[in-house]
Length: 471
Picture 1: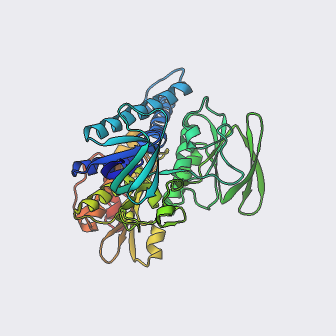
Picture 2: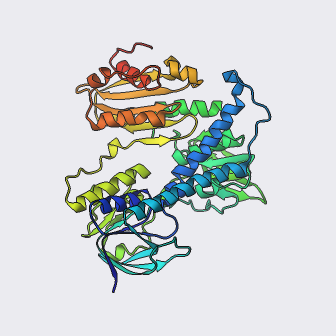
Picture 3: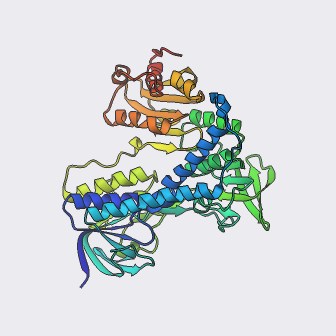
């Protein structure tokens, strides 16, 4: 007899474990199938460990610039192995926390690789190194099965990562030593975060981006400010260029780069990172066999996680962009609460914030200025620079910009875009405002504390309506 559940979640990443816990809270009998690590890529090899690395780099940067703050520090250096060890320790601690939360909520963990044999039925092939108390391989059934298998790095033909000279973000997180030179292929969030980390630690970094703009999903003006700062910090950026091939050497690699004008350059570096996006893990699950609709590697869902096959759901990266942990978590909650019959709302992807934790940080939500214009909206745009903010100057972080975009007719906040220190912590204020359908009048009448970086948000709003005080 197969073990039976109300809900089985395939994948123990942010979307999967959050969905499982919420389902258990709602009284369902729940199991999570995981084959390698609870917490998924985000916790073990993505969001969390990269932030630990970037924190080490940030502190190292401040130590190098101690004199800017009237301080002195001698014999500044770092131990690459210790930096990596701290990062891995942070991930291990949080992975243990996920296991604790699942156990606390009486969610069974099934350790292995799941494949659909029919709607509502899966076969699990046991995996190695199961955690204590986990169930193993076998047949399992559930009224509802949620697929949350995440994504993996995209590989370009002829430029496939080899773990030695060409790295994915997995390899870039655990270097045996810091390379003296590095080429990063791709300037999205993953590529720029690693470029920023390695440059801060002293590596000569070159970024190659096929599009004219780095950080392609961000507002053009914000991306331009960020680029200027990256280059000021010594990063070399080639936009409108592509890596057409590589020549590998014993302990270095030469990238053959072609720019938008057809000119060709050879760039030899110690290591190269391939950061050209991710692809959803939809293969090997038996989804096609049970009739689940998949388009361009994405499982088609209805906004509530439901696929075209009753009782089968998909959330997170395999359900389409933006491929972000917080989007996956929210989708998991929506999906489970819909199954329960609660009043839910479909995911509004326009109100999902995006954050890039480089130096300087970048954060955004909603429409860019270009997208708003393309949508035919008449807009008002506000801007406020960090140089006009007392807290930013006191922090020694005077470079940055806050930009807000409003509908000129209704006062609706259409988008907010920031570059500078701690903007990843500030953006949620605008996210809340958009969800509450706040107008410019509401924001102008809101009292922001002084002295804080958040005052720049207020000034940017007032700027859009010609009322900025400090600029």
